Amino acid sequence: MKNAKLKSAVRCISVLVTFLVAAGTLYAYDSVVTGNNNPELDVKAIQNAVDKGGTVLLKGTFNFGQKGQVIIKNDIEISGENDDKGSPMTKIIGGFWPFHSPLPTTELPIPGPGPKMTIKNIHFDGAVWTPMHFPYTSGAEISGNKITNVQPFELAIKWKGGDTLWVNAGAILGTRFAHREKILPGAVTGLLTFVNNEVDLKCDNPNITMGQGAFYIWTWGAIIEIKGNTFKNVSRNTIETLDNYIDESGSGRVTITDNKIITPSDGCPFPGPTSYPNGIVVGWFLDMSGGTDPSRNSKTVIMNNYIETSGERASGIISLGDGTVVLENKIVMGGGSKSKGISLLGSNGFAARNKIEGSGAWALRTIPWKELKGSENTFAWNDISEFKASSADFMCLGNNNTFIGAKCNVDDKGKNNKMLSKN
Image 1 (cartoon, rainbow, N blue to C red):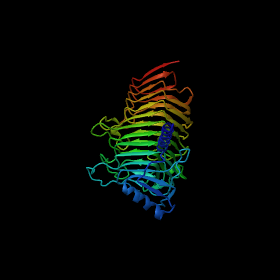
Image 2 (cartoon, rainbow, N blue to C red; image 1 turned 90 degrees about the vertical axis):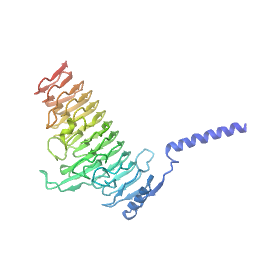
Image 3 (cartoon, rainbow, N blue to C red; image 1 turned 135 degrees about the vertical axis):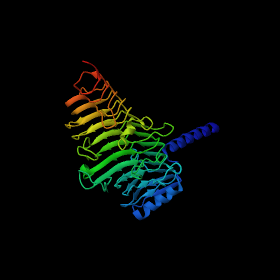
Image 4 (cartoon, rainbow, N blue to C red; image 1 turned 120 degrees about the horizontal axis):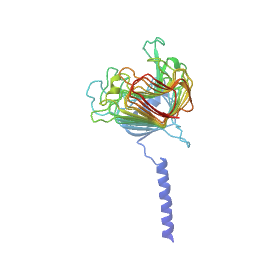
């Protein structure tokens, strides 16, 4: 009898330990740092813990002031605490790029891989420009964070909208703002994930602020996964992946899935007024020829996202590269007279089983632009039955494209395009 009771007690303790470990209660962190809501203490405390490497747990509220910044040079996992609903309780207030992994050099070759990092379960509130800027990493997981009140930063760029341009972002990965001259192979690579974050980039002057919710530009052989996030009030492009290179081994892809995006009605027309504010923009812009070059162009899949647009010139999804796959997304358009649902400017793309509702200029569009040909794309069984077009349901200026689906209003100005429709 005693042995039976002992065995039963051991089983209960084993189940309890398993539960506690699963809940993270017994997780052993290398460092635990408690916030003082004091810039003079908080930045240094986190920096000391990060310099030791390993795993760091942040508890409470930290204040970085206007310029506080933690430099990441080694592999690190930085976690905050969550409440019983899974929302971050740990808060970091302010800071200029509060978490930053600077380039060790701008000379080639890069001296080895950058740090692998995890940033999760933290509420970033009031950071300047962006709470996370990573131009040097060999792998980054950004998950479960809340990003609010990001303060726009002024860039000395003259443009038609004013003497200067302001920028803000949820996170920036890539070398564009650390070394503007050219891509640095190997600087930002590996698995780069942005998962289950909540981003709100509401600002006072969206018309002169170029906002990006999750911004990946000039990565090298990276596996980019953007999944399950909620975005709102992003004044330019909510999810933006541009000029991301395949590496020598052929590695490199972009996957954007299961995100919820609600764009504002007002946005920033920089670098041009063609389309803004937009849901998802992928492909190539700094060097448009990369979008047609299979040795550079990372293949992209955009699937099962929900996007609401309301701007006069807004677009749901824009592809600026060849071979983009756009599947089973839902786009609700708010009636802008020059707004677009899905635009494929590259070639050999595939857009299928997307649902586009509301009203705007066009539901679906394929057109050439600069080096992009807008040709040999396939649009198959997209549901536009609840869309009201002011111009046409499908606009086609490229050549050799194929449209398959219910009969609709088509504006075909290209050559050898096939419209396989039925009532």
